Structures are given as structure tokens and as C-alpha cells.
Length: 163
Image (cartoon, rainbow, N blue to C red; front, side, top):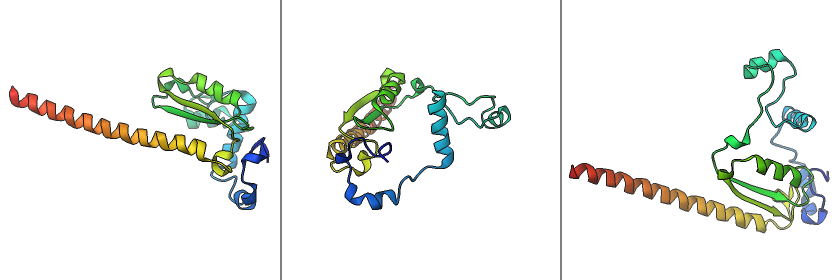
């Protein structure tokens, strides 16, 4: 379980381990796990390979699964990483970060955490405080955006009245 949990067991809440593993792994499928395996084995970050030209053509309109170009992402990206994460290690996190368009790189922070520590860690406050800050900032930016759109529309109307 250390590859799913954490290389440092002091970070996770093992007192509730029986409850936690009763619900995990959840939210995924064997097909999804097979897809992860394909990406690890091939080193290609892309869509699932159905194993035949016929199936890939049926799903993607091409004989091979498409690769994903992270530089095409156009929304801000926040990365939370764990220094003792055995599943998404810092090498992978930094590599993925390097593939992003520089204009969308908003936040990359490494915490003293493993992969699942973010969900069931003993101390979740460090990243929860950062996450709360992002939510508040996003809400403020959205309000500012709405206010700017209202002012812009009002100014258009005023200009229209003065013509």
C-alpha cells in the first residue's frame, strides 16, 4: 500500500485505515488502471490504446490513440505535489509542469505529503489553507470580472446615448 499511500507513514491517518481502505480505491475502473499502465509502459501521455487499428479508428478516427498536448491548456493550473508521493513523484510532477503553457502556470507547491495524504493526512491544513485562498481569489476575480462587464456594458449604453 505504500505506493498508493505514502513513503512516510507518519503523515497519514492510520487510525482510520480500516474505514479508508473500505472506500478506496474508488472512483476509477480497471480500464482506467489499464490506461495508466499503458502510459507508464510506453512513456506516452495520451488517450487509451484499444489495441488494434480497427478499434482505435472507431474511437479516434485514426489508427493510433492521440497524444495529449498540455501546452494547449488555456486555464490557470494549480499543482499540489507531495514530497513523499510514490505514485505521482516529483520527477513526473515537474515534467508535467514543464509541458504546460507558461501563461497558465499559476501555482506549483510541494508539501510534506504522499499521494493520499492530501485526502486522509493527519495534518491537511497547509494545502487546505492554500486551496481556500485560491477559491476566495477566484470568487473575487469572478466578481471583479462581472463588475467590469457591467461597467463596460453601461459605458457602451452611455456612448450610445451621446451619439
